[in-house]
Length: 386
Image 1 (cartoon, rainbow, N blue to C red):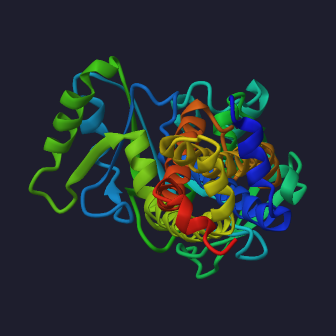
Image 2: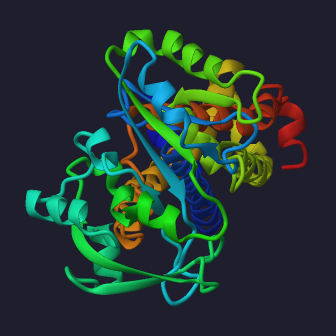
């Protein structure tokens, strides 16, 4: 801190250049903060999924499994309760905006304690209504749906037995979730699998995946192996995995989100290295006589080295902290604007520590060559002709 005023004055020697560079650093770390939040959404597991596993086709999550597996899975030691679901892939009026819609078993909502909050009267109405559907609160607000309203979904995959593609449902329940990390479920549209199985012309007595609740999460590996052994060497071999792993495989149908985010961040920071490196090189080149004067006044070589490195690190840290702070402000706004479809978590300590580490590393890298040049500077050569 002894020479902070000297470093600060050197940093703002060219105000316009410093401001533009700060804006570039701010933008880079704003992107880092937002992309890290997106990566966290796709990689983080459901905290409420302990003791819950998903049984899907070993070949692909798009391959259906026979409903006849249900009885066998229920009798596996350690299995507490089993439900099932099937991806429907329908849309309302227009293909966009997209929202998840599933045909589910009658006990599906009860398998996810703490996730779906549905009033008892609406839960009973759902159980008693053959073509009934329950929808998330965010989805209901988006399309202005109300209880009792009939809603047609256009099937993208499953036509009806009469050849039509429009499936009519009655909204009998609107659910919410208390967990802010699970707000995305409020974008879901759920209806009875039995109604779907009876009415679709594509397949019969098949389900997309089974949801298994365990008596004891500690026995998950044993139960998973036992379930998969039921269909071994058959034409419908299964893969039993945690809910987190299943959600990740579902997301990878879009692409490897972590790899995409990492690639974007790598490109951004590589560009940032070039930009700030050029800025620091110019700044030191312009101040060669000044650095020579400092050495003339008694500043040691390592002190000059430290001053240039401190200037470089300060430049990156200032812009980086501003960018991360802006990302903290924007993530809840983006989450709210998405209606729960993209529930970005607040930037946590891990993200901040990673960002600060990157700031220090980038600052040292871009300042290293200019700082070495300043340290090796010969006073006679620098002041020659002046």
